[in-house]
Length: 381
Image (tube, rainbow, N blue to C red; front, side, top):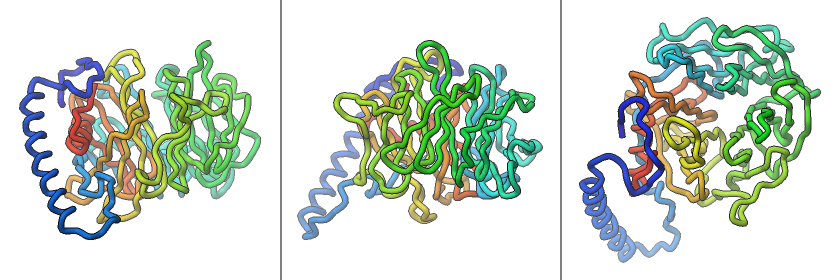
């Protein structure tokens, strides 16, 4: 689904590019064969316990365009900064066992693209502190980094990486503090810091703590959706789905529901979460996808990335990632997205942690094609 840089597409699951009719016919033919095979299997299989999850029939994968292995140890989370000129953009990767932040220059494909890691006393509040959560506020060109075994969220300016301030929730965070951001209607920004069973809420501008709440389930990763004013929190431990909260931490309800996804969808921990927003470039209209890492620590099975409709929370299916050599990406903690069009990635990048060691990044065109093939429904903007 490659388009010209800057091309805008409107969310329409039934329309994409000029070859829709041809692809629809092909998909229809494949579905006929699949249905016939399924009927035959049903007739010859006495087991009533066949897994209804479509992913169990073989997850469709997208092949990564790059694998970035840097100075970090036990890497965890990813964030992109979109420079005015796309070739000046950067990728940041946290290191859960070292007090540094990996810094990568576009296009992230070569060892030479790794820059000197970011280190600073703020990131190392004590000898065993290391980086875990990271986010970029694209509107203010600020980088936020949360360190474990530390009371600090460290804020740096972009692109010069100058320390601007330190935000504290008044506690020492545990192993996996993570971050999210929501711009509330009056224009203020709320920074969210997760800490095992609690979420601390701060005024991002002043750093002041303005609240806290305890989500229904244990957590690490979060995603702030400013368009819909909702904070998404995957259940990290018990496979019950993704929980939704208002900016102040109360339960968010959509069409009578407060959670989506369950143990029929998630095979393992709900970890990283990100969105693909529509239109592909330009002001967010509320359409698109929510993608959640289903953290499968099995190199042969590979990690699942569960996909939901952003407007309806409907489950759309799953996809996987392959490394350029053919192996499956597995054991994914953080995931990240940039939709900035660039010469090498016209539709942006979907990036995922590969087994605590590196970042695998694939063009969104490949990922959308994989989702479409897996679900039998054309998706994109």
